[in-house]
Length: 110
Image (cartoon, rainbow, N blue to C red; front, side):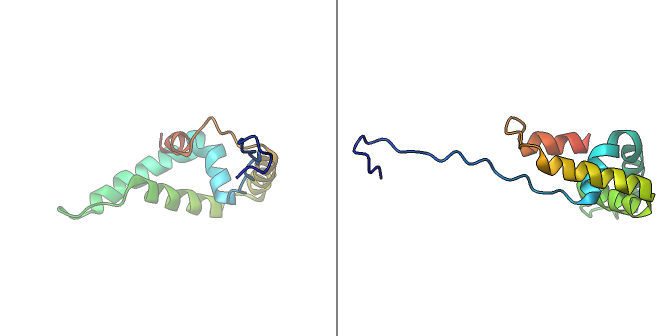
C-alpha cells in the first residue's frame, strides 16, 4: 500500500547479484566451440551406441557436463589461472537481462 496518499506504489530497483559460476562452467563457456564440442559430440555418439534398445538415453546435456568436468580436471595450471581470472571478472559484470537463460543454455548446446 502507498502511504503517500497518491495511490502509486514505489518500486525498488534492485539488480540481481551475478552468481559466480563454477570454474568448469567458465571453462566450458571459454573453450566449448574450439576445444570441447568435438569431444562432447564424440562422447555422446559413443554413449548412444551403448544404450540398449528400448532404453531412454541420457540427454546430451548430461554427457556434455561429464566431458567438460573431466577435461577441466586435466587442464594445465595456466588454463586454470586464465579461467579463474575470467570467472572473477564475470562476477563483477552486470546481469544481461536481455538474454534469457534459455538462449544462454542453447548456446552451450550448439
